[in-house]
Image (cartoon, rainbow, N blue to C red):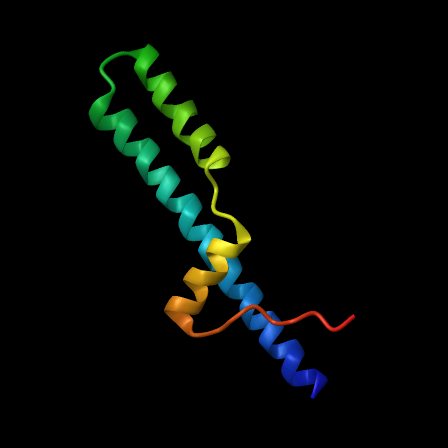
Length: 83
């Protein structure tokens, strides 16, 4: 029984890591688009490099929101802690 719980916990942790990876990649893609296609001078390039990363950090999703998204797309909820 403990093995099943441990396996579910590992699977859920892998989903969390994938969600954060997707969030980071979307932030990087946004930065690249802004720097390459929107910025017109070096000052704007610098601004568009730093500000989306700062905004992504400040507006990062909460664990509760990630739990909802993971449940929506995979059907798996966060394992309960039995300590």
